[in-house]
Image (cartoon, rainbow, N blue to C red; front, side, top):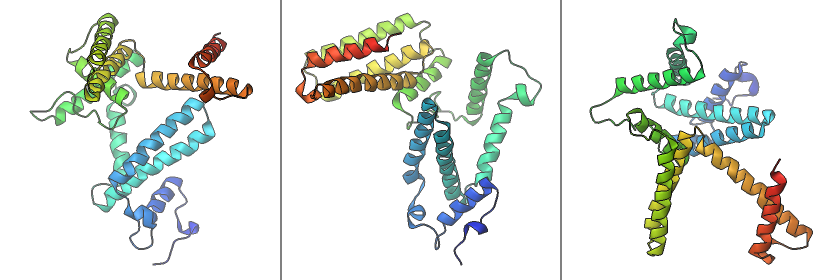
Length: 273
């Protein structure tokens, strides 16, 4: 079989991408690296590409967003191609499934129903998802089933809490959640004072983070987005510390904590409106 040339590939962009992937995975003429991959080895790239899409959106870089969306689309095509090779499904089946799901979950757009606003639609969407899960449920299934373990930990905590809240396992206001955070911090203090091993401290710190994620949920704040914003804020302020010291011919390694703290406060004040 001869190698393909670009002229041999379909002109339609989507069909062209599917054909490219088929050739990359060809058992004889394909790329050695692409042929060796499987679902498990490709999954980390899929997650990475999704994060790069989110990063481009945060930076409002539309050219980069276009490219990153292409990289993410490639991941979908890659997984679909491997599934087709196993006789499980093909890309067309993936597209058909999401088309069907979007139509079913938007009866106010593609049917006779109506919704008042976005909040009502969110509630309807969650109800539709719950109904779908109920239709697939087994006797020993949990309301928490289907919350992927591979999600970022803060995001997964939020989703687990939302699932539990649907069946009434939730506080009705932020106040008790704040009390829980203070309780968990007290337990961390107690473990530190007792000289607890790292395993105990890890468990208690996890409880604090889970409680903070719960507070964010009650305040309708995305904890993952909040932490990303704080990471960016820390980066900006610490770079100010580094640059200020560099202007003095120094580095953080040669400065005292008090000196760096003063520069940190300076950066913090500069950010205030």
